[in-house]
Image 1 (cartoon, rainbow over the protein chains, first blue to last red):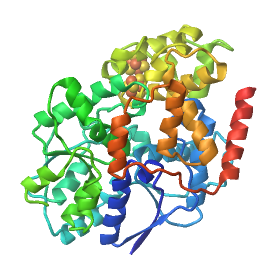
Image 2 (image 1 turned 60 degrees about the horizontal axis):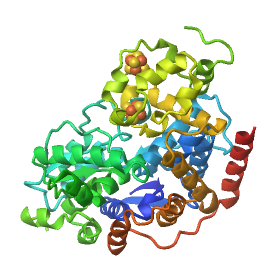
Image 3 (image 1 turned 120 degrees about the vertical axis):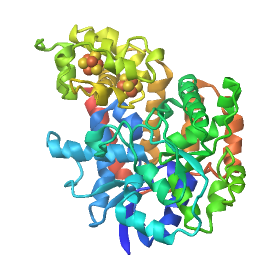
Image 4 (image 1 turned 180 degrees about the horizontal axis):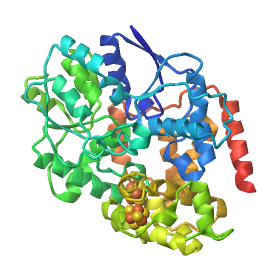
Length: 283
Length: 181
Ligand code: SF4
Ligand code: SF4
């Protein structure tokens, strides 16, 4: 049994609830023990780094100092939190700043997608797969911070990443190549410049449709919320019908591994995934 | 181009750690920027303005707030200039120096967001949205969507309890002290 620390972050306690539930569900099936960090606080997200670099570093570092009390890896499902934590790690390496909390930089920080795309886990997934996602055409949408900047993420193929596509293959699904994998959906402006966000979202959804995808898969709670919950609004404005389910990769893992709660997770989506999945005989 | 002392250029170079003097205006950053169409000065022009010490022009621009921190520019710059990081530095300087921002709601949102962390330690999405809407007086936008999300169990009505409040206070106290300087 692998044991890891777990920092859910704020959105997984709210709009991204099904991401949290599906990660916990999948971890359970793969015998990975998740230990939620005690008394974790917000990583500061974009508002902190837009306002003050010091503030951003300290808000994130507080959580890393808690994580460092155990020897476990830290699993981080929200890519915004992940990116903030890695920034602290880099800051510490450069050694230019004193950090308030006793954090030494010894916590392996793992973004959920990278964590689950690891070779051993993929082998395990293939072995335990009870319901291959045959015939399900997916576009993998990585977005920004899962791959950029590479000095933070360590992803070499940041213009055309493949790891999520590979994971989808292991689940039996059919990942389609498309050129919007790493385009920005503008989620950080969702409350303030909805007009910009709509335009970026429309482009991504309409390209996914053009690629003839049955659904779009992501590991970012901001992208998911943005493309799922606003889809109807985008359709109205664009005069185009997308009807494209926006799924977390962990939900599809749960489906292929036969988790009992998949229906509950998928029931939380605003753009209903049931029709597509039923059509493929997967539900 | 060597930054003269006390210039805006040297302030940005020092705070960001980025050698933006190396920019040769190839415009690759702006070409790939997903939100360039909504900016008042393009990312490559921001760099040029900094080199020319146009402090006001840069700090009061829309651009620094519209930048979505997507890092597309940073990975494509042939001179390895981390433009996204420079945008962060510029926002930091703009807030500290109290320049009137070119975009009203975006910096307002950030300050409401940080207030929420300060008082609750974690972001409780519903409180954050209501707080922001109180300031912008725009309650109707997204109300129907909010109701739909509530019914899907995506909206938590009450914030979760959290420990560590004292540490969070300390972090914000020293931040406020620095800003007041
Ligand atoms: S990509 Fe780099 S060198 Fe080219 S204009 Fe932008 S900052 Fe300058
Ligand atoms: S980081 Fe900002 S400036 Fe650079 S490409 Fe993205 S939105 Fe444009």
